[in-house]
Amino acid sequence: MKNKYSNIETQLITAGEPEPRVMGAVGMPVFQSSTYEYSGEEEYHDIRYIRLNNTPNHIALTKKLTAIENGEAAMVTSSGMAAISTALLTVLNSGDHLLAQNILYGGTFDFISKDFKTYGIEFDFIDCDKPKEWKSKLKPNTKAIYCESITNPLMQVCDLKEVVSFAKENNIVSLIDNTFTSPVNFKPLQIGFDLSLHSCTKYMNGHNDIVAGAVIGKKELIEQFTHKLNLLGGTLDPHTCFLLHRGLKTLALRVRYQTKVP
Ligand SMILES: *Cc1c(COP(=O)(O)O)cnc(C)c1O
Image (cartoon, rainbow, N blue to C red; front, side, top):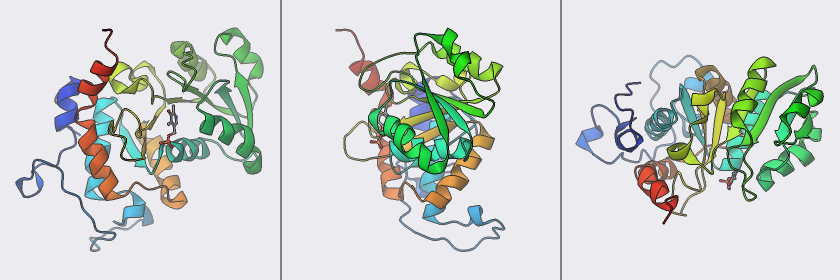
């Protein structure tokens, strides 16, 4: 994808917009069509169908999200929890082990602490203030480490560079929920995180009128994530894609204003 502009204000407006614009439309139109004419697709995941997350609205929106967090690819989901649960089930299989920050968004904390055992996935919580202790929690089957950039609602912040170097040293996948900072204030992929997750219900959309999620990261991981999402079905519908796309255009203006010291 062309990423001509480095400044986020301009990326939010221009990145991912179709070239040429659809019938000249400056606002991305809503493609309210569940299926599309067959055009030579050979793989199941390439069939053009809303649940397979590949409508023109998905394509434009995910290109914009990719640009603003400096990723290789992105996908959107029907809620933040759909992004989080699908990402965890993409990187972890039965028999694997996760290390997770001990303070997390409630839904995520419950999914890990209550539901993981039904999938046969093991976990341990780690104290963010004590990175020296993390190594002792590492197991031969540890596959990933999970944290939030600023936790909701307790506002704890881990040493995020330490999380990335721990993941790299131990060859495990690093995931971060970046909802609370938004890419205006922090871009996790730039410091080496593998997957950045969002509840787009919050700052990303900004108007309290949708529920949506996103994941941004390496191309290969996003492809695996999308295949899992295609089957679990937590798809964002084209009209909600449109609303999120529209909301994103003012993300930087809103977040800068919201986080400005008076
Ligand atoms: C709101 C929130 C979620 C869950 O998002 P939904 O869109 O409600 O599913 C996950 N993580 C954080 C940090 C949140 O604030």
